[in-house]
Amino acid sequence: MYAQLVETGQKNLRQREDMSPEERAFQDRVDADIKIEAKDWMPDAYRKTLIRQIQQHAHSEIVGMLPEGNWIGRAPSLQRKAILMAKVQDEGGHGLYLYGAAETLGVSRDQMVADLHAGNSKYSSIFNYPTLTWADIGAIGWLVDGAAIMNQIPLCRCSYGPYARAMVRICKEESFHQRQGYDIMLKLCAGTPEQKAMAQDALNRWWWPSLMMFGPPDADSVHSAQSAQWKIKLLSNDELRQRFVDQTVPQADHLGIAMPDPDLRWNADGGRYDFGAIDWTEFHSVLKGNGPCNRERLAARVKAWDDGAWVRDAAVAHAAKCAARAVRAAA
Ligand code: BYC
Image 1: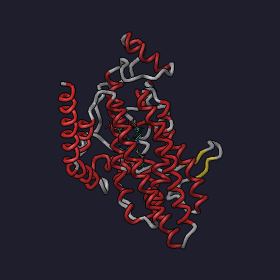
Image 2: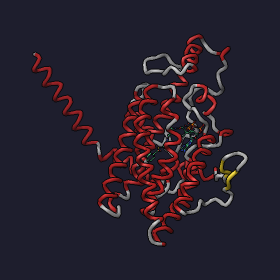
Image 3: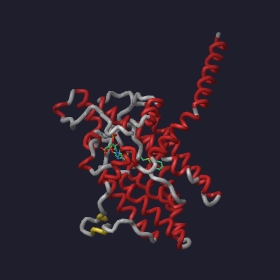
Image 4: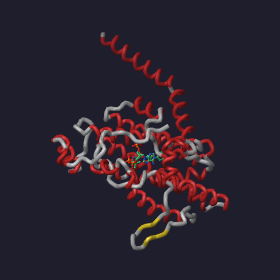
């Protein structure tokens, strides 16, 4: 279902002495924290790496609308419904900024969508899990958006200007999303025993997949070294995962619910929480297309694209009519 790894044409880190003069000048700009812009010269592998990452990110935003959109019609109050609708629309907007940023690198939106639908481009593993109860909407905002912010704040400082600038706005909106999720969890945890049990059950199911969002351990992360050299990645998968754990455990304590990890404990010497082993077999199985909802998610996206064909056709016909009218008026 999925391509296993995207080929960027570069297997090893390029050493300075192996670089062409153009590559050296490019690396110097990156090292000096000067943003790379769309029209600047860039190594082909840098361009391909960014297209790979930004389009996966865009797809994640769009596919990420599905599990939450599933609860708009069942939100427990008008206010919760309005908030959730706004959040899901925000995610659609994030997808558009990101597709726009990827287009500046020379790939078309149609190509990116075709890659997603053909299973040639990934989206975040997290969106292949189901939203079974209203508490899952709280857990997604708290944990999934929380993990997303942790990963995305450093991207606001990444070397590629259009991506970095898109991330600034996205991060502002994500922090509202995180707070609305935590607010749902606070309400449930202060409610009846049944409501608190729902919150605990959602935490149990979303905790480990949220930790997987940061990607494989650094030792197994094929793209990290090169992306770090190019300042696409400013912090490693494991560093970000650790920061997320350290930030989130006290929030669970405040809610009065327990992390589903018997090995979790405060490490006073290290100044961090040690946590249990992540099930990487599950992660790789989800990436291969075998998560609980992979097929459903892709089918929903393909159906939405097919159902929207008439809108795209109408927009193209309207644009052609306007252009013909302008030509006639100028004649
Ligand atoms: N899921 O060498 P690595 C959101 C892939 S949206 C699926 O470490 P890299 C939200 C990776 O792509 C959240 N695949 O890769 C939306 C690579 O495969 P390819 C999305 C994953 O790129 C709506 C292979 O594994 N955020 O938060 O250096 C509502 C090897 O990995 C995953 C972004 O996309 C995964 N979890 O680092 C609510 C942020 N992890 O491409 C919330 C931007 C790894 O060779 N992306 N893979 O086929 C990144 O920061 C980086 O791409 C990653 C991975 C840290 C995710």
